[in-house]
Picture (cartoon, rainbow, N blue to C red):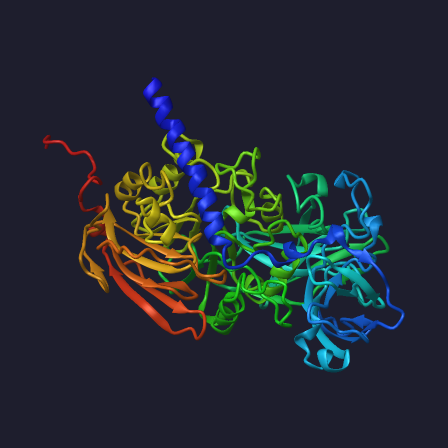
Length: 616
C-alpha cells in the first residue's frame, strides 16, 4: 500500500511539473496582450493640448453588428510608446473598481480595455502628432470610449479621453452558436443579448421552406464577477457578459434546410429581431450520405483592424477562420477541441470570439471541448493546478456555448452525426481507469453500433495519445503524463479509428499504433481489418506554434510546423477521406483514406477479440 501511495504521489508530481513546463513553453512566444497593461498604475494627467475624437457617434444604423470607427488623435509631444485603448462601458474610472480589489489607495482605473493599438501604427503620428486610427468594433451591449495613453503599457499615463460612441441598439440579439442536441433531431441555438428575462422574453422563430414558422422558448443564463475563481477574471479582466440564451429546436427532419432568427418580446408586446440565419439539420444516425467534419484546436481570435491586442499570441486565427468561411458550403459540422478564445480571464474577449466565428457557428454546429485555457485554476477541481484560465475556471466556456453533456461542469459528452460517433473527453478532469470520466469514455465507445455508425472518433484537448512535441520529448514519454496508459486498451478494444488532440500547436499524424508499436506500415491508404488507432495532433489552428523534438520515433509519419486544420469526409459506410489543410491557403498538405467494411470492423485483432466458445 505504501508503494502504491508513493507511486501516486510521484505521478501527481510529474503531472504538475509537466503542466508548469507546458505553460511556460506555450506562453514563451506571446502572452494575452491585455495582461501586459498595468492598469492599476495608470496616472491621470489630462493634457489640454492633446485630444482624441471618435466617429461616427451612432453605430449599426443599418442593423450591423460590426462597424469601423475612425479615431482622430492629436498630441504635441508624440512618443513611440503612446497607445489608444478602447474601453466599454465608456465610463471606465474608479467607479468600476470592485471592493475586493484590496488596494490601499484606490486606482484610477480597474478595468482593462477591450483592445488597444499603438498610435505609431499610423506613421503620421510620429511625424506630426496627428493621426487617424481605425478600429473595428462589435456590438457588446455597452457604449465605447477611446483613451490616449503615454508611458507605454507598464507605466501608462492617461492624457486624453474621447467622446462616447454606441450601437443604435446595444442590447440586440447577436452571434448565434449552433450545437447538436442530445437527440439526433435537435439543434440548439445559443446567442447573447443585453435583455434580462425581466425586460423581454427570448425565443427562436424557425421554419423549413413551405411550412409555417414555429417558436421555441429560450432559457437565459449569465454569470457574475463572483462566479470567477481569481484574477484577472475577477479583477481587471472582468466585464459583464450580458445574457446568454439557449433554445432547442426539436423534431427536425433530417438533412433539410431551416431558416431561423432570434427574438425578444418586450413587455409592451413589440419584438426585437436578429438577422435571419440558416442551417441544415443533422442526418439520421447511420444515414448513408456525404458527411464532412472539421476538427482543430487552439485557434483563439484575431483582430481585423490590426490592433496589437494579441500581437503574436494567435497569428493564425483569422486565416483558419477565413478558410472555413470560404469553404462553408462544403462543411457540415465543426469541432473546436479546446483552448477556444485564449481570453485568459479577460471576459470581453468571449464576445469578440463569438463575433469572429459567427459566420461559421450560425450555419453549422460548432462543438467545443474544454482546454487548459478554459478550465485550469488551483483548488477549483481541475486535474491540473495551473492558472491558464486566468481565473475563469470553466464558467464562460460552459455558459457561452451549448454542448450535450449531462453536467456541463464535467465537459465530456458523446455526439452522433450520421455515420460518425464522437466521444469527447475532458482532459482537465481525471480520465484514468477508475474515474467517472473513464467509465463515460468506455460507455461512449462501447455503445455505438458500428454497423450503422462505422466511424468512431475520440477527441481530447491534451495529447493523451502520441506527440513528438518538444516538451513531451524532454519528458521522454511523447504524451501527456499518464495519458495513454489507461486509455489505449479502450481504443484498441473498441477499435477507435482516429483520436484527435490539440494543446500542442502543430500538426502530427501517427501510424495505426498500439502500445508504441506501428500495427500497419501503410501511410496513405488503410484497408481491411482494424489494426490500431491513428493519433492526430491538430492544435495549430491559430496560437503561436510549438516546436517538435529533435527525436522522431518511427510511429510519427507526418509532422508540420504550420497552421492548419483537419477535414474528414465520409462518403459512405466503407470509405473515409482524411485531409490536413493549410490555414494560409486551404491546400491539402497531408491525406489518407480508409476503406473498411463491416466484416473488417468485426474481425478479431490483437486485444480486441470478443469471447468465443468451442460449443456448436
